[in-house]
Structure formats: structure tokens, C-alpha cells
Length: 227
Image 1 (cartoon, helix red, strand yellow):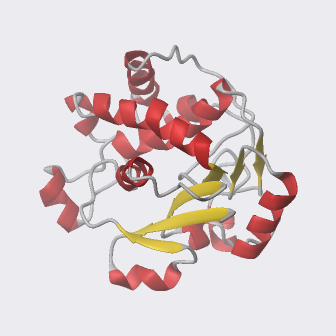
Image 2 (cartoon, helix red, strand yellow):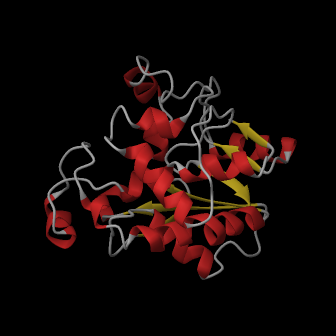
């Protein structure tokens, strides 16, 4: 198989929005889709595919015109791709260029970690601490290749390397950092998650994990293209 992409969903009414292989996140953790990402790679779900990806159920919505208009005032977050997305056209571009990784979106170069400080207080401090504890000397850096929302497909061996060398070790460290349970200033959790998480607000875990692949791609000098 050339490309295998799983799409995380949480409840049955989200199924009509899916365009890739459905994967039910039965027991959502504070890491959100990063927990099934780790589980899939550790269970070798990527084996047998040239490229592998795991995206959220909101992929189609976030790539649409409405979201582009919504984020127009924040060019760093906005998707600047002018290509209309279809799974077929995405795979065609991936085959044509054969990069190490291809994003479903297109973002302007910036520092996604320092930029996150505007929305999540202490974000860069936490990111630096986590990276240091797993052996990386992160410093503020403007990145040419930025990935948000785990919206990317990478060569399967590189996806596995990312999970094993950065994401999984970081998640293990983050479980021992109670300060990450603080309010990330994103808003309130759905009612069902408040009970299981023990807090009413979104914590830092998922947002920190979301920024890690951009840094991984940077330090490994991956050949990246953006749809």
C-alpha cells in the first residue's frame, strides 16, 4: 500500500465526516489523538504502507473555506494552500514529489512554540523542559516547515522514528509533570471528559505534542512539502 491514513473519531455522529480509515478513540486521555498515534505505531499499524498518517475527524472541516476565513486574521495558523483538497489529489501530489513528509496544510514559516505562548501561558517553558528531559536542546527557532493538528503523512519509517524517539518519550515524561494539568486557556472540556480528566479545562498535553513533529522535522532536516 502506498498511503495509509487513520482518522480518529470519538462518537458515532462524527463518522459521516471521515474520509480515511476510521479509528474510534474509546478512552480519550489528556493527550487526545496522540495516545492512539502512539498505540498504532507500537502495534505496527504503519507496517506495509510507504506513507502513514493519523489525523482527527475534523480534517475535512479544517481544510475547508470556512476555516480559512476564520483564521485569516492569524496568518501563522491559517492554511495558505490554494489547492482544493481531495484524498485522490493529495495522494497524487505525494506520489509525484515523494518527499519525507507532506502536510495536508500550508503554513507560513514561523516559530510554532514561541507563537503558542500567545494562547497558552508558559507553553515555551514547558516545551523546553520536556525536550531537555528527553535529550534535546530546544531553542526558539523560526521553522520553514510547520505542521499543526498532526495533519501530515510521513514515510512510515520516519513516522515510527518520530514516535519512538520523541513523542513516546515525551509523553512518558509529561505524565510525571503535574503542572501540565493546569489550565491551558483553551476553554472548557466536554462534560464527559471533565470527570475522567479530573479538571474542567483543557490541559497542556495535547497542544505540546502537536508542536513536536515540526521540531522533529527541523532537527532531522527532513524533505518536507505542503499541499
